[in-house]
Image (cartoon, rainbow over all chains, first blue to last red; front, side, top):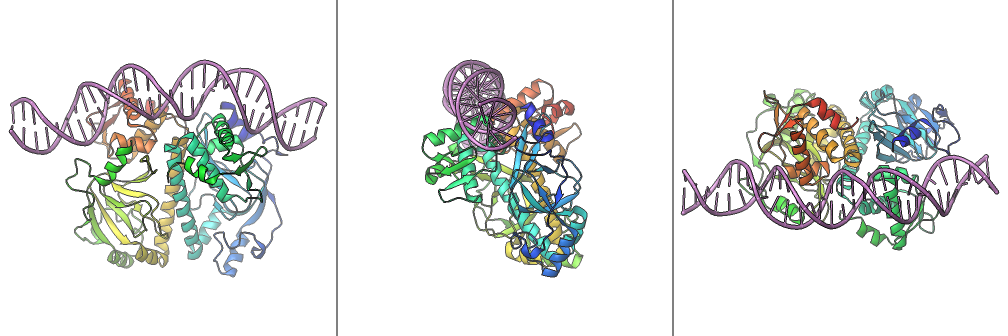
Length: 254
Length: 254
DNA sequence: CGCGACCTTGAGGTGTTTCAACACCAGTGG
DNA sequence: CCACTGGTGTTGAAACACCTCAAGGTCGCG
């Protein structure tokens, strides 16, 4: 438990080809017109002139799995839209215990606008692409564009609702209920291939860090569910939800 | 455990003189000029004309301890500023397990603007006074007043930061650490009288529902801290923080 | 093929919950 | 004034869910 934190933060995950201290790489600029999240991100309903203006103050960057974009406690220098990939938001205690406080997907917004401190670290779980803005410039732009600010508000309110719902899981659910709830949640969020399998963007340790459990407990629960025929576990990170009704029942009320 | 939920929701707490189904009572209208939270609430930096206009669409209501203003899952009909008192935000599982997801104080904003569903129940912990607005009217007003919307955004971002920090406590801290963190937090938020005593607005059960523990564990932890001379427990809800440094140490990192 | 990281499984320990009894206190009515 | 009562808080003993520690297995990659 004590080693884990340092490894995750200092050294790259083994499957990552280069250290996380590697600078973020600029990538093909691309105009907003071809942006894959154009009509879901917070910039969606800006008049196209304004959107291009916003685009001017930002830049596209590519991340490799394992790279950390922002560090808990640092000054808040940048905010970003997620164009592609999955990232985790996490906080930790001095002794290395970690809690993942959010997982973000394409079109989500990350960083702390209108504030000086970054409240949690942001780390890429998969390779990812961001549309990155200097925080102060973004703040200024948002202040003068009501539509953008409204969209950001709506998104933040949604995040808050989902975060509070997750508190119920952390505070009151059993390990079995936590894992079942997690799998159903991932089933809703991730692409499902033809045989009903999803590919988790998370290791067992990261799942544990989302649910407030240990890696062993997560493993035991998942394999027990497999034994019960509720799920299948094809490959390291694959999960097939075989009996969603049974899973719902295991997830506890609400 | 199964009874608790129903009792809390259906029957009034014993010290409450009348059922929670009692209607909210209108109270002295009062203009914004004399409002105790005038320069801390979200309406703070509205031009005084706009503030009076907002005031027109709202009304002042008084609540008794135990009364519930909004119910989880209901349509979102009203939002409000807290003028006076302390309230809890809570969600629960079908079987009665409850998690308190927030505690709000004067000048805080409650309810779900720009959304149709109430994500959690809101219940008065002490007698309280609110400045209550119909949600749709408030939404409309906010949309056309950037300053109000900005203020609401800033507050929501803060709430989200604090909520995420609390997830670390729920997922990763021990009972001892949870209770210590809670007491320090309350010490920062509540008025402290001359001998350093604070009066918790919460019963042991409610403290347990905030920390994701049982009432017995909370009781044992607090009395153990008392035995260690770190705190004193004068009366049912009183707490004196004697050794804040030791408490900090017990609260774990961060 | 072989390495390293990740995942699984087992056995044992422990912190928290569960169950149960009792103490405390404020309000009520005799 | 005192006993009574219902809610709240405390304490103890036992059960148990989850964690810890330790080993072995599996997968993906060079």
